[in-house]
Image (cartoon, rainbow, N blue to C red; front, top):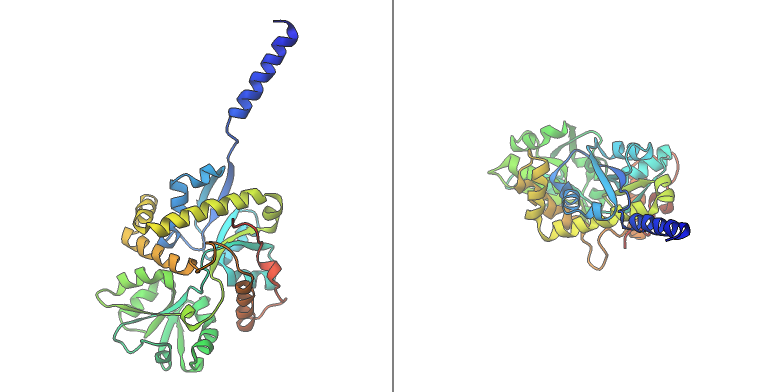
Amino acid sequence: MNLLGRLAAVVGLTLAVAAAAPAQAADVNFITDFGFNGRHAYFYVAREKGYYKEAGLNVTFLRGQGSADAIKKVAAGLATIGFADAGSLVLARGNDGVPVKLVSIVYARPPQAIFAVKGAGIATPKDLEGKTIADTASSSVRLLFPAFAKAAGIDATKVKWVVAEGSALPSLLANGRVDAIGQFSVGEPLIAAAIAPKQAVRIAYKDAGLDFYGNGLIASEETIAQHPDLVRAFVRATIRGMKDAFANPAEAAAIMAKYQKELAPSIIEGETKLVSELATVPGQPLGRINAKSIAGTIDVISANFTLKSPVQPAQLYAPGFVE
């Protein structure tokens, strides 16, 4: 073989090896809204089953300290993708101009709820009048209560709110020190365990007909513009994890419990079922953002909070990332 032939063979072999070699996985730092809880099980399913890896992603989970924290870290580039409350994103946009958008929704229905003890005189929204409810100072359950009260046809001024630490809420309810507590509906399994053998009563904001979003996946405008394929891949892999987790919550619980040993599998399973309840909308693809619900979210937040600047739907979400 002459020199040109040998060179051609070497080049051909090099190209063949390069073609066969897997592309280097992209590093993704994903931050939760708050801690690692059973409601996050589908992210662990997506990682355990290799869905992120198949999508070309090397995902690291970061423990969030609230939706506002997740939004700030995504905006600053300290996290690539986040999981945060849509209402908190409206506030971040309207008051601080934070360049972050929703790319997929998870809690497609309002997650806010009020919990009481069965048999203690609270069974309907009207029963909340004259009662005392405990919640954290910045809880969206408390801050959006006027919107719920209006939708449910009750007098919000007849309800007394007291501020308490989040970790103390279940015990306050169990001990009868308050009539009810505010909590996301996905937290019901934890509350039920804390007040057992008593039973919990859930009064959910979504049941009053309110139409606004809860938590979803977020990314910075810079990441959306410069790395749309990465964002799309993360959303696709996560939705695969959601579908598996919703179809088999017990399996999802077993998977997450391997990583978060302090969580009881029964609690993880229960929270996963409740996430499915919030995420599944008949006739709508899982994760797909609906423009009408985005507008409803902005309307609810604008009516109950002070915004320095009005927020437009186009500022809140980026379409096209859910297949």
